[in-house]
Length: 139
Ligand code: CA2
Image 1 (cartoon, rainbow, N blue to C red):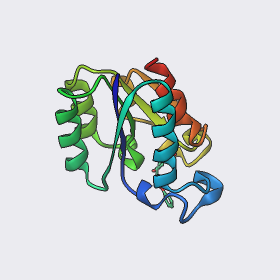
Image 2 (cartoon, rainbow, N blue to C red):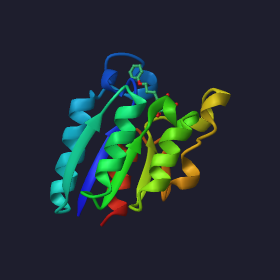
Image 3 (tube, rainbow, N blue to C red):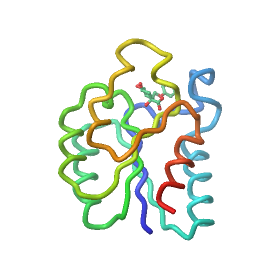
């Protein structure tokens, strides 16, 4: 099982600000924990982070030939990127949408995801465990 974890805009700043919402872990330590759990499950796991919509779309396209599944936190693109939605719809591998925070308890604009309808599942509000739970789906 080969899994790609994609993190979108501003998630490179994890651990630096807003610890009350996003926790104290840096992106590096979060990826480290995911890697460790993936290894326990016997999965290969790669990571990609970008602040650029097109780079995320290119990565989704390329992933369709190389990976069995994708875990994506599309950051704020979740709420308005029809281009990322179309890219997910175009690749025929399972994509799990994750969020660190519970987007439904936050500002109104975060309550709607344009990518959820084309994702296999959605996990939000469990902090770093959102990613770890998504990994379990692929067992
Ligand atoms: O809860 C999540 O995982 C989000 O996808 C995070 C996105 C936000 O736009 C979504 O509505 C929910 C933003 C990530 C911003 O990350 C920061 C990390 C540290 C400091 C500032 C922002």
